[in-house]
Amino acid sequence: MKIVFMGTPEFAIPSLQKILESKHQVIAVVSVPDRERGRGRRVTYSPVKEFALKNKITVYNPVSLKDPEFISTLKELKPDLFIVVAFRILPKEIYSIPVKGSFNLHGSLLPKYRGAAPIQWALINGDKLTGVTTFFLEDKIDTGNIILQENLPINDEDDFGSLHDKMMKLGSEVVLKTITLIDSGNYSLTKQNDSTASSAPKITKEICEINWNKSVFEIHNLVRGLSPYPGAFFSHNGKTYKIFKTKLIENGELIIENSNINSPFAIRNSQLPFIQTKKEIFVQTKNGVLQILELQPENRKRMTAEEFLRGYSLIN
Image (cartoon, rainbow, N blue to C red; front, side, top):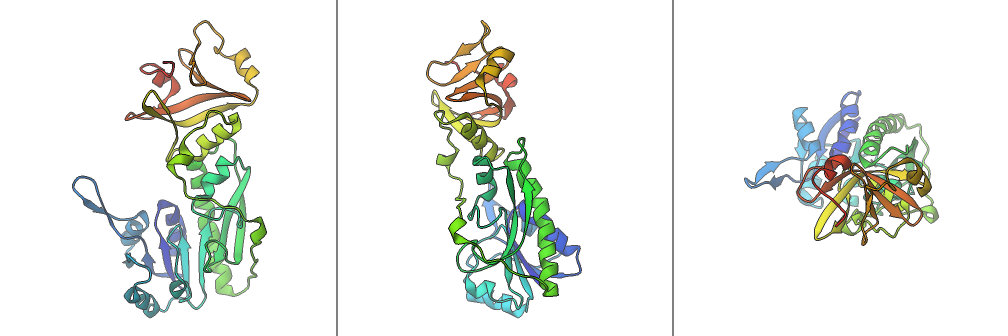
């Protein structure tokens, strides 16, 4: 089949690679417009565009997806299929062009977590299972008929970075399986049940701020869902600190028995729920204790708690 691939970030590259290694032909790639970065205003490409150019694939990056000239160009390519992985919302004028339709890869088990940040919200909500879905595009976001789904367990140690990479690999495999099904014509579609749908809105700065009044589980899962980017944070004495890794202690008594938390060298912050020893940082929540393992002071690099305590303190 003749395929036009549409994507932007690193997450989409393994899917594009799988297609290039298959019998199908990628006749073009569509990505976001180039951007100027840094003091020198150097023009940079999206990861997908950079990968496509290295593989000598024609790339289009229109400012507007409704540009008549761009739409005309896509029609002239006479594509069999459009594949969308982490791209923009396509208007009907575009997704209806290919003779065999347009499908999207989504990082959740739809209709759960429709929206921009499904991987993050699965972790923030403490889910134990997630997966990927391919579906044909319709006007409303993430609502089209499901072609294929595959599950992926979420491990206790997973954060956004590790789960993203696992889903990136699984997603590429499911994209290729979906292409094979569509090419054969031997597939059935599953209509999404809107009554069981949930949303995964874009991650904002307000979502990233830690509320120390929440449970130990909620704080721990927020850190997991936002690590390594953009990072859960809190403010103290006019400075911002990001937390990237924590250790969940469901029963605070275990910490008290098995650590230095109650030693003569442990110091508590009277305003925030922090407890420090010479090498450790703990947070006392309403239903347990959380140990902070990795954090980042404002304008400094990410570091372990022990490294942090050599030059910084949260007890002041």
